[in-house]
Length: 455
Image (cartoon, rainbow, N blue to C red; front, side, top):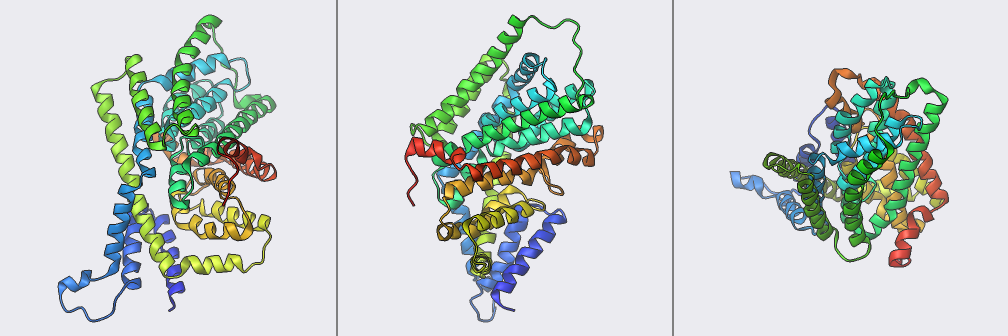
């Protein structure tokens, strides 16, 4: 059996184990060590117990672990996570959702619109899909259920809105992509701003049109004694402006070149604590919860990186990347055909895999081909970022659906959630096509802020 065949067997076995429910990070690490032991075997008989460890795979795991720990780009991850968890526990999102609902109460599907807007704002403060979907599942879904919203429709709104966290800066996914592709996180953040806002806008337009076409999906809630407009807009001002200012300062300092992502994330974490104190919602218990959840999520990300990089290194060493890249390169395609094929592969991989495995294992296969086909790497990154929205929305591994199901338990069936998220898959694909036709949606802002990209 040749090495490329071993690599393909390694990949196929990994997908099977993931579908069987094994933990992804440690499955990647175990597969990397197991197949790496074969790949890096130095020959010779094993005469003592210590000879078992005389294999370069263990050195590779050690180096990958050290590389993750010292990567300056990844330092921003725990700080952004802490900022999001502090804001979540400060009850700011609760006030924001209610205020947005009251302000939009005369529009069709006002509760759904308020949920999407809250998801978009909270996503920029958090970047954590699980946190956004979970919180909005506890906050917005009961309100929509009490208003007799269709279950699938309400679930789809929350799941789709929650996934905006991996696209709208400060996105954890974009930080990971920058580390993998050796791109500037500043340019990636600038490139993602308009596509993220555009996608959120399309979601809102879809909700308004769908409810206008089928009013029974979202009956207009009755309100006997609505608060006066002055009170409504004051509550919106108090809940919306401080969080927006914090987000603007964080993103502005990054895009303006005043701070690195890690420095801006530290400022955001401090700002989140200040907001929590000003809202009188920061307690010692909530602070401990935020620290614990940050450490837990960061550890998961770090182990995922160690496992993914080990897996990818062994897979590449065995010739897996080369055989796939040679196959793609040998198809004699036009640039647009290459982009369609790459995005189709990533879309299909979103069925069994999460975004992190797709980024770390498969995206590096396409990166060397970008120069061959003359594709701007930042434009390709935005196509991938949009496409990865589908990894949270495509069964059977639609993680946003599982996050919501975990919160709602018996209130809704998983198949009802799947039905609700399907229209948003079409919206994501439409946005990708639109961005392909008008690349300036992604490239205008980074080119304006930092000058035209020069390879």
